Image (cartoon, rainbow, N blue to C red; front, side, top):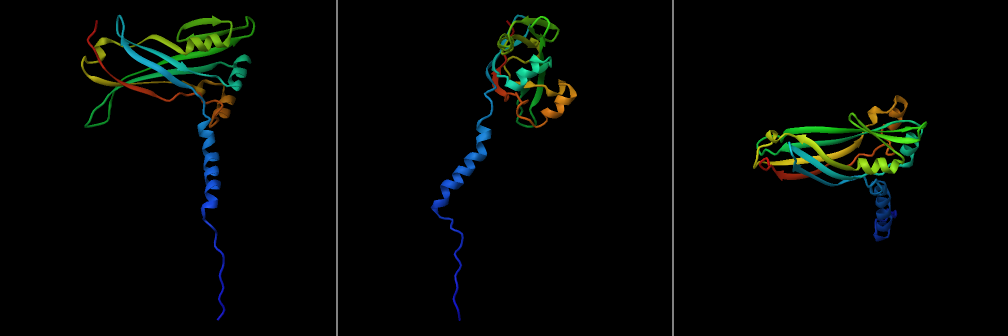
Length: 197
């Protein structure tokens, strides 16, 4: 009888660094995501209802800056929601609002225009437009009668780049591309509704 042995694949400690390196390489793209985020947000009682104040970090990548300079308008939407948590069922959606932005460039006057709803303002630089867009102040989202004083609610805010408003050829390019995704994550916080002033 002849005995024979075949060396098996070594799964020893010498392969652990290689495995770790491969895992890190797989997750590097996730770590390199943009720093677009809602830095600060609050819901406060204003003169005639509840208003949102927020600061958002947003950086346009060179591809989007180039599109704007060639006359393509970019559309963004600040989305705000208030839900009332319920232990016995799904959370109740109380308020859903959006604030729509449009950034465009006018080559004849060499100015950038920021449109917020029906309001328009011109700027000399794109940085000025972004600084204005990143500071949301006194955005009225609810009447005092909408929220019950003393109840606890959960508020959520995010800013998204609305690629559905791009011209059709760019919409196809934007599908699944990280160059076009400037969406922030939802910032969520809880608050207790106070009595109207």
